[in-house]
Length: 254
Image (tube, rainbow, N blue to C red; front, top):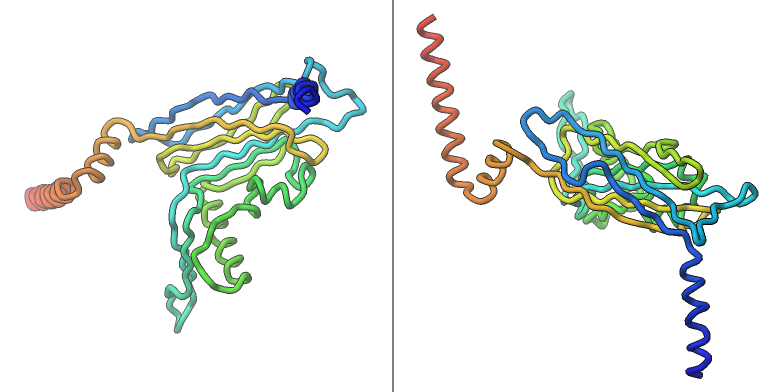
């Protein structure tokens, strides 16, 4: 038995090495938010390493790339408004335990042409396959309505989007894609997951981390608000009073 296992080990190693691998990278590992920040554009690029350096032949299924960029998860509550007696009021609501604060997916072809629904659900590929974790016992139809509303709200603000045909693959080896980061992006650790897909299967995956941080005066204000809330609140009240007094003095003079 031991001899058989010893003979099988090299074969298993060859089988494991027969799969292609990904070597991804990003143009910026750190994004600093300052007062003049209007957004950023990330360039995600890399190479596909095939075993033995042999690329797929012309008769083989083509290799495709899917890139999923996620921001830190957060708890969020979604409220649904209804018109009552001519006035819009908050009606039903639903809380989500772990909704990504940012989500973007770029692919070399439309997702439904690359993988099936089960694979998309496993890897959360696409806005309609996000696992938002609602904290509710409401019927499935109501949960779906609120989830679609949350996705639509974040799509309108540029925090959620998907871009088919955004990944360019050169010679079946090199790939690149651009992801837009809006000005309202939250701070925290982001992950960029790259998937190599062929013939409906995920053959390889790799992850890179991106950090979005506040810098300069914005960072000082954020850290003060978190670590010394009383001093931050007192300073805000004092600044508001002084600005109001200064505006009143100028108004009386002119």
